Amino acid sequence: MSSISNVSSTPVSQPTTQASPPPPPPPPKDDKDTTSIQPPKAALPPGQGTRVDQLA
Image 1 (tube, helix red, strand yellow):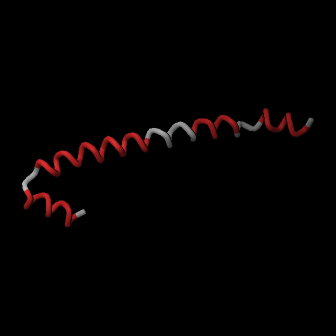
Image 2 (cartoon, rainbow, N blue to C red; image 1 turned 90 degrees about the vertical axis):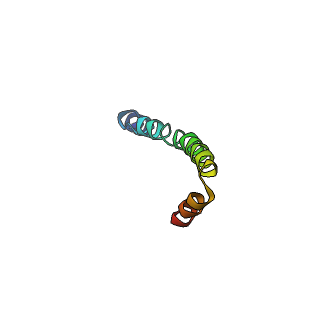
Image 3 (spheres, helix red, strand yellow; image 1 turned 60 degrees about the horizontal axis):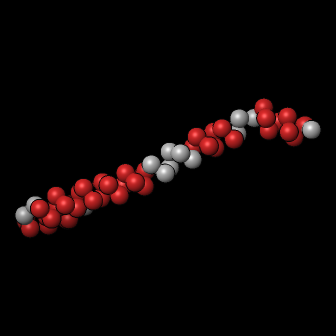
């Protein structure tokens, strides 16, 4: 009985659920960022492309 009351009183389930949603968004954003960065890289001249590669 005490355990049930404690779980209900402790907002552990809420924080865990809220923390889970944030992680999923990052992956898709990274994928889009990589795809968006790749096209411009190839479009840039070989000189600039090498420079960016070296910097990275």
